[in-house]
View 1 (cartoon, rainbow, N blue to C red):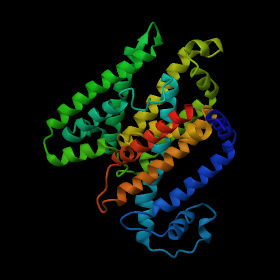
View 2 (cartoon, rainbow, N blue to C red; view 1 turned 90 degrees about the vertical axis):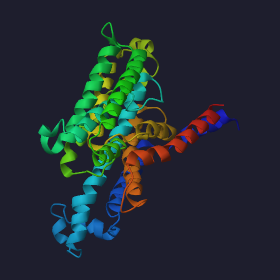
View 3 (cartoon, one colour; view 1 turned 180 degrees about the vertical axis):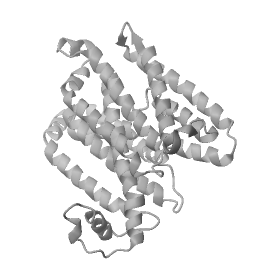
View 4 (cartoon, helix red, strand yellow; view 1 turned 45 degrees about the vertical axis):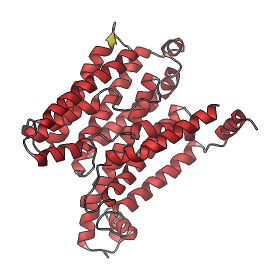
Amino acid sequence: MKRKEIRLLAEKNKPGLAVLIGILLLASILTVLLTTGLGPVSVPPGTTAKILLSRLPFFGESIPVSWEILDENIVLGLRLPRVCLGMVVGASLAVCGVAMQALVRNNLADPFILGVSNGASAFATLGMLFGAFSFLGTYSLSISAFIGSAVSILFVYGISRVRGRINITQLLLSGVAVSMMMDGVTNVITLSAPNALGLHNAEFWMSGSLAGARWAYLTLPLVVLVLCMAVLMIHYRELNLLLLGDESAAALGVNVRRLQKLLVLVASLMAGVTIAVSGSIGFVGLMVPHFTRFLVGGDHRKVLPVSALLGGILVVWVDVAARLLIAPEELPVGILTSIIGGPIFIWMLKKSNRDKA
């Protein structure tokens, strides 16, 4: 049997969307139950499940309290907000990667291609090392990072507009240019760091971490994820047609100019909000959409929800590894995603090339 015939047979044998979504939802629930109890101080999965069920309305009263207060504080106060934030961050990065790849029609695009990460890092380090945004209070780090990402987005968007329309080539090039400028600003700030501890904290944050997770940090990323996901799902047909090229998509009735602006807005908003609460966690927005297309094909109606669930599961488990590898210390999540994701992505590229041969 020829390779082309094998590939067509594989396409037919791919699981249905409903079945795959159901499996991934079950995997997400199991992930939350298992990872919430994992850490330097472990809580058994059964105890974790009882603690979580006890907080459900109408059902929690029937759960007898058989755990210690310390276990409850660990699960509800420390681990659960971190796991939930990991699910939201991973889903946002994966969906953002799908949107960026559709916008530039290149599967090598990722959420940080517009300089969002570098802009956020520049403003965040300025706040952490010199207290420039201390007047913003408790959430000064997140707000300063979001401001930095927004500044980068505005620069890139302004430069890439040609006669009122986004030029994709210019968008990519301006993203690279702004990234380099913001990276230079970050280097100047870190080289001028007044103390070693502040520099260490800044470097740790820039490498991506969920260590500072709080319940209050979940609201905005979750709302942005739900809204942007809904917008992208509504326009999934236009996203499919956009992959054919601007002219072909326009001939088929797509308002290309409006769709491009919408994708820039959605991707930038998701990336900016995500970086603001977790730092730069790389490779998720690049690798997960590739793996998703390998599973379900290129239809965005399938790619978007599957990518969101896979991204969330991936980030949560990598965060667990980051907590346990050198416990009681922990590694930045972004470092592990790059170390793990790099070889996997190379394997996927090689496999894709073999299948096309």
